[in-house]
Structure formats: structure tokens, C-alpha cells
Length: 131
Length: 153
Image 1 (cartoon, one colour):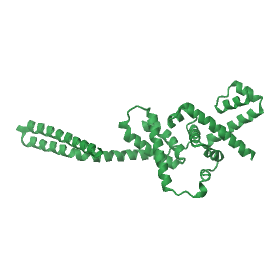
Image 2: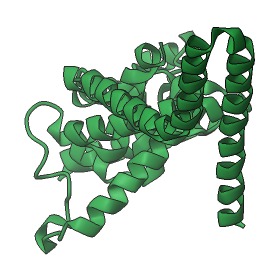
Image 3: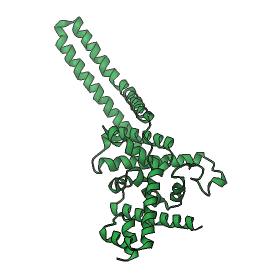
Image 4: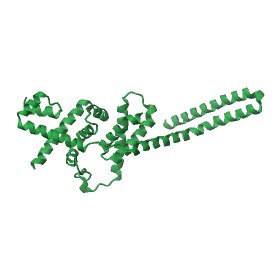
């Protein structure tokens, strides 16, 4: 083994028995190995990663909560119409029990239809906006 | 779950890219929030780690660009940017690392932050492991030369 191959192996963290045998009898490679070990130790000290601050986790959780609130705020208006429709049909069913089935059935069908209609309308306006 | 698995790794990747713990926390927070927002669109084509690290790298770059627009850099700090920030143990070697080409610097810093895992560094930087090893090899060689040069002078 020559010095070039030995130093390459040291740089590749691949110093095997052959390399160590060469290093034992070669001043140049011995000092190269010592230099690399010292460099490795200094780099370990210089780039020991600091611990993650407790604020990071709290910040992420707060961000997620904000996002959830924002999403709910965006969803809420589209639930108002079908929700109100269902509430009115429920009231009708209470006031006129003989027509309860019809009132509730109509309320559910119209509530679902209005929600789907709103979703379609939103989707279409977004598609047209992007187009 | 994702937070537990990736919080530290994302922070370390951000730290290697922005070089400052406070800013790295900002970047890590933004990145993990973006991950949470985009999770329903994650299609599994790339490994989850690769996808998260890509988001982190892009977020760090956005922060760095925004920072460079905001900040007016004094001329005297351009010559040796790390010098002012470095003090104490490891300061000398940090100064040498700052002089490495960018791709070698990123690899060597992450390699030590990630407790010497070539595999993890490759995943974080989206590079083949062979390329990471090659950057490490060149960086260590160059650092050794710089150290010898410093000793000789």
C-alpha cells in the first residue's frame, strides 16, 4: 500500500488493517491520520446540534389550531343554509306531527341538495376563476 | 406522530441551511405547518421523509431570500461572514468550513448534526449516498489542507 491509497482510505473512514500497518511505518500518513482524527473531533464539537427549543412544538401546535379555526370559518357559511333548512323542517314536524315524515324528508332532501349545490357552485366558480 | 419523528431532523436540516438556531426554529415551524396543511395531498410517490425534507429545503430557501432582501449587509462583513458569529470551541474549524464550496459545506455540517449518518444526509439533501460520500471525502481533504496551511503559516 502506498501513501496515496492509505490517505484515501483514511478520508473515506475506511482504514482497515492494511492501512494501519502502513501508517505504523510511515510518518507522513501517521501525522495525516492524527490530523484527520483531530479534525473529526473539532467538527463534532463545532457541529453538535443544539437541542430543539420547547417553543417549536408549541408554535407548531398553535399554528395547527389557527389553521383548524380558519378552515372551520371557511366551512361554516356553507353549513348555514342546509342547517337552517333542517331546523325549520324539524320545527314543522313538531308543529304538525301528522305531516312529520313529509316535513323531515323534504328538509333532509332539500338540505342535502342545497349543500351539494353550494359545493358545485364553489367548485365551478373556482374552476372558471383559474381558467 | 410526524412531529415526534421529524421535528428534530427538520430542525437540524433547517439549521444546516440557515446557520442560526432561532431562524432554524422559524423555518422548522413553517415547514412542519406546511407539511400538516399539505398532508392530504401527499400521494406517496416520494418517501415521506424525502417529501418533508423537500418542503423544509424550499421553506429555508424562501426565508433566506426574504432575509437577503430585507437586510443591508455591511461591506466589511462580506469578506468573512462566519467570523463574527463564531466564538469558543470549534470556532476555528467553523471558519474553515465556511470556506468550503456550498455543496461540501452543507454535507459536512449535516453529517455531524446527524451523528455521522450518510444515509440520513443523502435523504435530507435528496442526493445519492455516493455523492454524499464524495462531498465528504473532498471536504475532509480540503479541510486537512487548510489546517496544514494554517499551521505552516
